[in-house]
Length: 236
Ligand SMILES: *Cc1c(COP(=O)(O)O)cnc(C)c1O
Image (tube, rainbow, N blue to C red; front, side):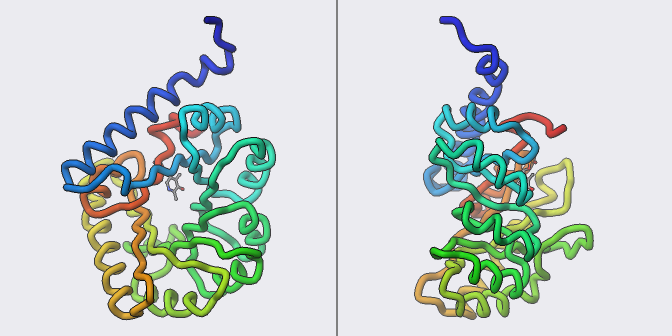
C-alpha cells in the first residue's frame, strides 16, 4: 500500500498514542482503578491541524488547546471532525467570546469575573474546572488554593456553567515524583470543597498529570490527564 507522504510523516503519533494508552491502563491497574475512568486529553497547542487529524484517525477525540485564536483557527480548519475541544490555557476575559462557543470544557477558570463572562457568553451550559496554582508561583495562572471554595460557591450560582472539578499544573521538575505532593493536595482540596459546598452532585474531576508525570497523577486519583509532548513530539 502506498501511503501519502503526509500520513507517513505522522506515523509516530499513532505509535505514541498506543504507548500512552497502554501506560495509562497499567497505571490505572496498579492503582486499583479502571482505565476507562481516566480521560486522555491530547494537548495539541503549536501542532499542525494535520497532526491533530492523524491523532483523530487513531480514535482520539478530545484535544486541548491553550490559545484562543489558535483554537478558533484549528476548529474551523477541522470542522469536518467530531472533536471535543478542551480549553486548557490562561483565558483572558476579552477572549472568552471566541473560546466559549467552540469548547466543550474550559479547564482554566481562575476568577469569578472570568466565570461570569463565560456564563454570559455561553448559549448552552459548559463544563468547567477551576485551575489551582498550588505552589503559588507568580509566573503561573490559576487561583490561590485558599480561594477555591469561595470561587466554587460563586460559580454554583451561574446557570450556564457546570462546575466539574479542579485542574492544576505543578511546578516544572524533571522528576515525576516531585509532582506527587501537588496531586495529593489537589485531591484533598476537591474533598474539602465538596464537604463545604454540599452540592447535589459532588465535584468529581481532577485534571492533573502531563507527559512527564501522568502515571504519578493517576496513582493519586487523576480523572483527566493532559498530554502533549509524548503524543506529538517536542513543541517548536
Ligand atoms: C502544554 C500543556 C500540557 C501538555 O504538556 P506536555 O508536557 O507537553 O505533555 C498540559 N496542560 C497544559 C495546561 C498545557 O498548557
